Image (cartoon, helix red, strand yellow):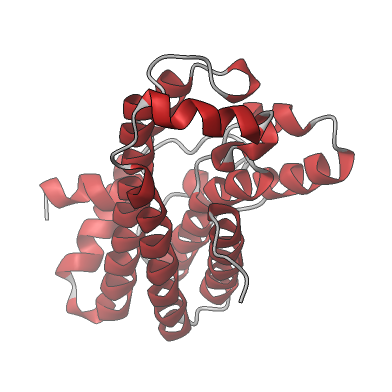
Amino acid sequence: MARSTPGNRHGLLCHELGRARREVRADDVPAVLRTLSRTMGHLRALEATWESYEDMTPADWNPIKAQLGKGEASSVHSYMYRHLVFLLGQKSPEMLEPHRSTPLIHQGLQEALSAPSLYDEVLALLQRRGLPVPDSAVHRVFAEPYVTQPQVEAAWVQVYHDKSFTDLRDLGEALTQVADRFHRWTQAHLTVTMRTFGDKPGYYHTPAVDWLRSGEDQTVFPELWSARTTM
């Protein structure tokens, strides 16, 4: 059996989230819930990959890093990771730059950047179901970062309060679980990096800790979280 690696898991997650996006587009909420349940299993396994690094010191890690080579060894700089975060709705055109020298990969990432994320498709579903999601949240330039809107937050509040939207509430909870587990994985990555790496430059000369910390400020499926204040 092939060894499970972060890259393998990223690929599985991209497959499952891409499938979930198609199922949302087809209004098949029960199928989406099954797909997101499998996605949670992949995310739990991905988070567990950091356990082997938890007690490493810089002296333990430095010889390993010396054998890894350049940026392609970093899972969070891999094209599959970038495809993954685009599917989750964390859009950033700058993330394509490290792959510009590989035209086929760069083109694939450009297509992923420009396509609706899973969250974009969910908001379109909410609008189709008669919820007050504004057109500006559904018909937008998908390559640009998503900007939160109070009307979307209000739509989620309605989903959770109105019993006629039970299936959409279940979908909201499944998405929240995915977002929660993804943030746990990124937090574990940040903590391990701080412990083993400190503030040394990372792959592609990126300030590793600062780069990872900046990702912590991006919330996946944001209005699902902010809406809880008024639920």
